Length: 194
Ligand SMILES: O=c1[nH]c(=O)c2ncn([C@@H]3O[C@H](COP(=O)(O)OP(=O)(O)OP(=O)(O)O)[C@@H](O)[C@H]3O)c2[nH]1
Ligand SMILES: [Mg+2]
Image (cartoon, rainbow, N blue to C red; front, side, top):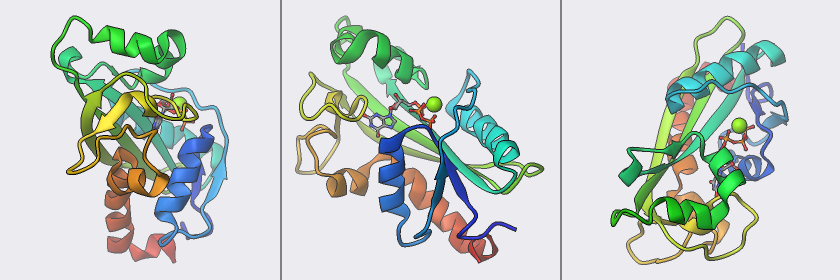
């Protein structure tokens, strides 16, 4: 049986881990984590996350959380999507802007799909959180991925994720929206966090 002290968030990404700990602090105050380099399926974000969770649950031999993050350009029907890690690595912030130079539509959405898997023989449950915005020239600190080129839609702020403070980003981000759904699931299934 999973418990608050046994759910392990499996990720190789320190920045994700810091945000997840902050957002989940009220529900899972002592979130364990493990850095495992898991193979990632190609395909739709939900399937990638779900398969990652199954592999993680086998490796950890217990309940796990994983997530997969995509950055989806509407003019490109959702690409680079889950392949953003490799696009960013190869072409950088300017290259991401250049991908859209032939299009007037600069809108995009950030997508975070968490998957919870209760153990090696369980089916994962997925939680899809999205944040709409647009791709802009890089602004702000460059310590986390594509944050400098993504300006989320916001009623008052015209800032990239990188220019926002953490609390501001966590209020509206793809990650916090996915985790809000996960929290609802944990509330409906209190036995998981006993
Ligand atoms: O600016 C950003 N703001 C974010 O909020 C964010 N979340 C993820 N990313 C980046 O997008 C790719 C996802 O790939 P990804 O989901 O496979 O992650 P990963 O391989 O780094 O870790 P993991 O798979 O071990 O959890 C990687 O390049 C991440 O660095 C972000 N960049
Ligand atoms: Mg990954």
